[in-house]
Length: 596
Image (cartoon, rainbow, N blue to C red; front, side):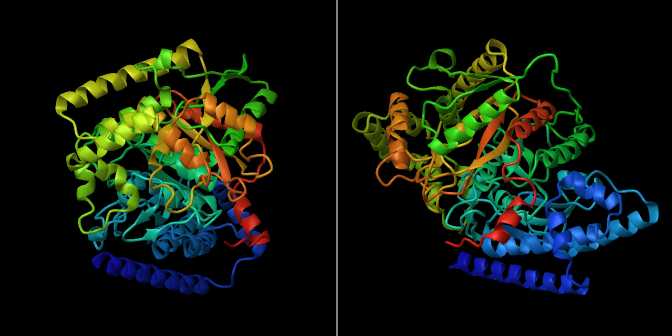
């Protein structure tokens, strides 16, 4: 099979590049001290630049790059998260920055000498952008994507590109060309997707800061699964030119490019770089807001007002994910802020009575995404075999109408699951007129949601779970793609959303108690999907998931990225140190070599 040969050749090419990197590092001289290495891996973006600028002993762009070449190499050997490995060019650029700094005494920009990882969809001059498809090999980009140019202008150094799922429409990070990527906390599990390689690499301190994209949770889910931070901007705040997609021209739900990192400070620095370049880029690019980064201050004459909810009306949040929300709520209250539980009720949000807001949003997402039967998306596979998690796309084809109808009947009348039935009904080809009707309903939903959150409740932000569970095992995402429901909701509304790691799964506190079961049954969610997760032999197992990271979403208004950064700082500071700071994973890994 051609794809197997292509994968073997790519893995051999990567292995050779890693061997050459070790030779390069040896030529740089003796290994750096353990203390300096640990200090570099424990520094955030701003601290790296500051330490280089202050000429602290050992702090050069070259040494920082040496540390992260080694860190990314080790991460890849365990997790398989890299696609294009740009170590030689990155080390050369680091030396150039050091030489220039030695001459002028001035840093190049706010990312001077910072290693930056990039989701594989971004074009980098001289390197492939395969997004995991075998036919896209050996087609190096003639120039950098505008976003990559902005990073270079700020002194950042792209040094690796990272893995994505097939078609970038899943949170199981697997492709024919690169194979399966693993979670840094448990290699039996997925790192999330579609920015899965980014999440995995950042989660294990293998990079400083990175770039992902998000159309249904694609920076937030990997950050939740892999224990890092992320920001989903509103569509149009960050340029998406020079970025490869699998459904070009699809604008019913727009993808947003955003930063991922190991601290809020990392997100802030990268967001400044991305937004400050937009006024000039917007002169020639479409759908780009020409507004640079705006420094904002949160109100000081009143407590901040946060809303939160646990139940989304579709699939109950696991005890671990509920606890992450409640720990965040209590931390904010302790810090003096107002935190109010609310329910996005059907009467206020939904045009039907059977579902709450999140499930309705997922229905719109599926209805609009499947309108063309995923024909363009599936055309990208060419000779690559469709991964199992692509079943949602293949089911939308008209040739499967009878099968889909039977499944819908079963869900509705046998399983008694109206939620699942409606999603199946929505996932099919549509006429132009049908698409217009769905978009009109979507627009009404957006307006009602925004009025509820920002006018009626006057929230500054909303705290909610990112997904129903922590990271699933490989293969378990196949029939559970609908678990994106909690993130998709905010893509439909086009909110700015921050993702923050909160805690780790604790079997002593996160088991399925009878009290939790009673709440779950009372909320009348999807019987089918809740049984998959919480029934006999279900996927949620607090004991087996022990130690996995768990995060929350911080939801804000549209085009409110700068304010969201400040709100994330408030939440992060309220939670305090908890094991997710830069370098914390590396320290734990050095202390404990737990292997599955």
